[in-house]
Image 1 (tube, one colour):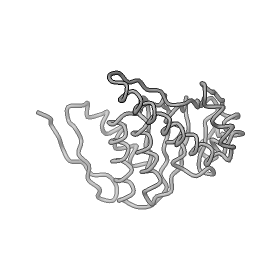
Image 2: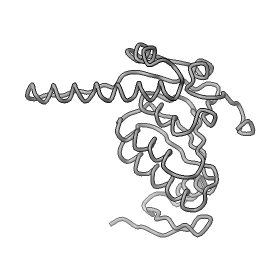
Image 3: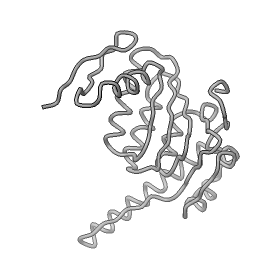
Image 4: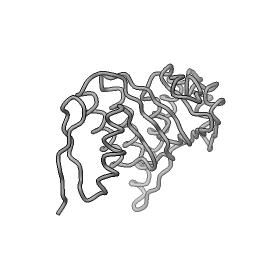
Amino acid sequence: MQNVSEQVIGGGIRIMADQTEKPEAQESIGLRMLQTRTVLISGQVDEKLAEKTMMQLLILDAENHDPIRVMITSQGGHVDSGFAIHDMLRFIESPITTIGAGWVASIAVPILFGASKERRFSLPHTRFLLHQPTGGAGGQATDIRIEAEEILKVRDRLNGLIASETGQDLERVTKDSDRNFWMDAEEAKVYGLVGQVVTSATEI
């Protein structure tokens, strides 16, 4: 049976904490991150990460509408989960700042776009990856065709978003993302993925 307790962060907002984890990890990482209005998106993007991230964003937005920093270090993952995070970043009223660290790949790039360009930053050694979505399907030919059509729709949606957020021509984005297209931090700035490369928090 899960051992759950209630804890309070600034502003009287209550969250439920799972006591099966180490208490020091809960307090020093989870609660302290929320208290600084910082959300970390790390690792594989999946349904669990999306749920956790959206919950944290809603909690912080309900507390007040001060800015929220979102640190992103991710290899990408589930497309719909990534779009769910992107949409939530745009949905809440608190101003969002996104910061790429380590690597921002695949569907993690649209998560980065949860902030407007002037509020998107990169740490100096971050790498960025654009590529077209992948997937697989077996079974009847009709099912395979439907899956292929959906992948093409997702590809077009991703490319359209990248073009809109960077100012690049859709034709160029489509060509660049046809294969793995890596950029370092400065190249990502020139491309329009981020507005500035920073080395210190005081620059944001």
